[in-house]
Length: 250
Length: 152
Image (cartoon, rainbow over all chains, first blue to last red; front, side):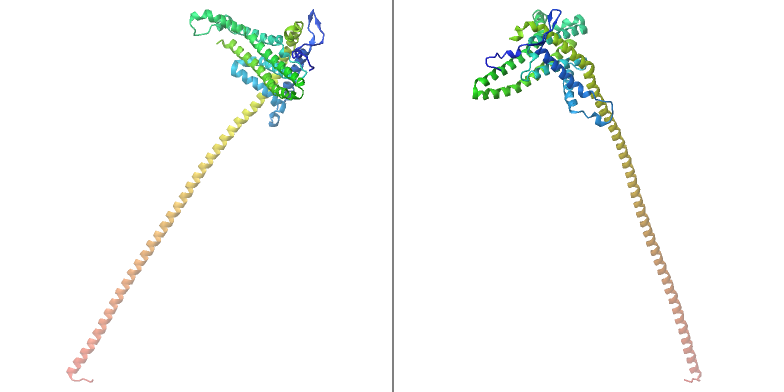
């Protein structure tokens, strides 16, 4: 955090291993490194506690360990989220929502570690995730309803003369879903980390009075951890709602 | 802003995002989540089986209580019956005793009365005899005087 360093420098991508594949630059960067850490952590966190689970009927084997309780908490959280928004049909899409939520959540949270890198603060990553969701949901709608899926843009119970005005609005709002979904996450991460860095710069600049921005940073870090969770939650719940729309149209 | 300036890393980011997301999704879908679900289901089954067992036991306990209460009322009825019987018996016995005593007393009174009457009769007849004797005596004395051979 040297003086004069741009608060945006933390978002810079630095290649760790240069890889060139068929003319494409797919270097292993700090972004990829933190994706690796996130993926590995999620897999370890949720898989390892259940590896030793054996089939017995004695009560003591059914007491969950601490790690199992923690993993169950995440499992049940997404389970109830999906059950509340989509209902019973939503069970099929549980792995997708779970993966999205955990990947974004731990990506955000690991981004809070000093000197780490937040891969969710890059618009290209969030846009890819959001586009993935958008394409999946659209395909799902067409698979489930065929051409009838277009009736999604017609709000039922509306006078006919309003349709020429409202159908374009509905289509635009539908097409802007991936943009709003990706920009929301990206902008939250970008703004939070930039703000932290700016105030961190004040700490060294103000000398003794730097204690004031320091206190502010501590509070802001707490808020950022909340936002890290909240944005992952928003992304997951919106995915659930889009799946629900695709399954039930209106 | 590096997010929009470092365009050269877009493909790299997309590539690694795809790689890790697919790895994460596949492993979670085929290994981790079924394991968690199986674990949770096992516990749910265990709890459910115990709940049904508990229901059975509650029913059993209820039937036992019913049985016990039925037996208890039966015993109570029997006890009250025995008490009533005993009361009746005692009452009857005492009444019999009173009756018998009264009869005995009546009988004795009657006997006494009879005896008294008999004694009275004998006394009267004795008195009559004595009177007769003394009258005869007197008369014989009177007649002797008239004859002149009185030897008083």
